[in-house]
Length: 98
Figure 1 (cartoon, helix red, strand yellow):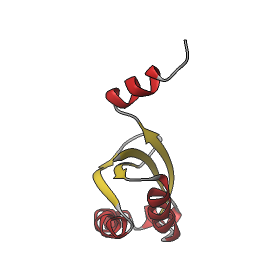
Figure 2: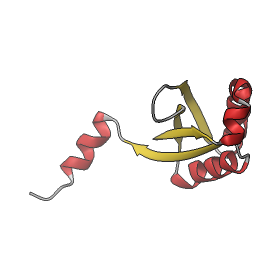
Figure 3: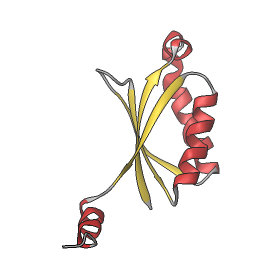
Figure 4: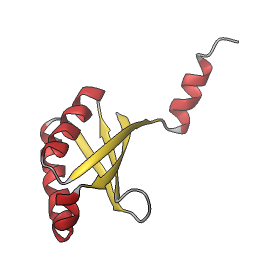
């Protein structure tokens, strides 16, 4: 499974309804599962981003579908990054020509 980290920012609609954000996160988890994405963690954060999602999926397409679905609801904007574990990074490094 591939790991993805999504940085989340509330839209004007999202901040207006911030009290609903835990319920919206639960609905997103359910929606994401339907397209093959597991939401491992949701963290609400202080600073530049309002939340961080840790996701797992078999492929980029599943995560793209989940994030498009989330964005279409209008409460958040996201930036999603592919994350690599230490063992994955070692494997990648081993493929770099010397």
